[in-house]
Length: 189
Ligand code: AMP
Image (cartoon, rainbow, N blue to C red; front, side, top):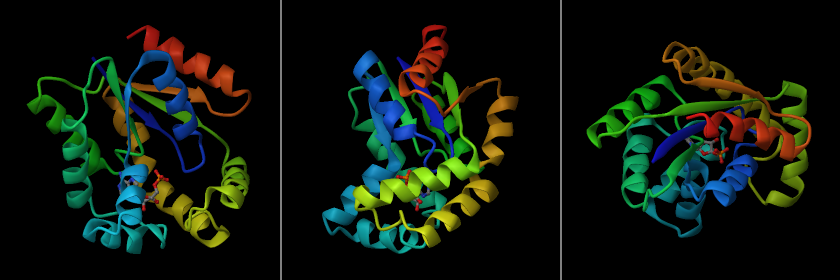
């Protein structure tokens, strides 16, 4: 049972690559963005709270996010492993994930970082916005999300590097080549 964090800026391809890894290895997949969008769609209290942040391109507060993550994780079958996509996004979230997994007798086995140049991220997100129906895939919110990523999330690169868990992979080019690079890391765990 492996716990794998897939990491990268908005638009770096975390969701696409996670889907390919799920198909290959049978991992469970936690996308915190998907969890929140489902709550919004279902009109829950949590969904209403989350929407206010998401629409502004801001992060949901850590305490709330950490509770959601733990509940989602505990509900999974966890047979082959779990891919964490979109979590952690802050250092307190990474510390909480470490604690949560330790309490359950396990740990993060690898962080896979998808590296994509900024101008490519913006282009991808603008294009995705044409079909995704996501309220946050518009030019203004995209700029805010990238700013939030650089300020609050990018420090996790050094954090995971120090923990000896970081594996950086080129996140542009052919999807299959990117996936092969990720699989090479996973097959070595
Ligand atoms: P994503 O689908 O991963 O791009 O997430 C969409 C939005 O959901 C983000 O811009 C945040 O507002 C919110 N979100 C998702 N995951 C997290 C997280 N781990 N911490 C805080 N906010 C999050």
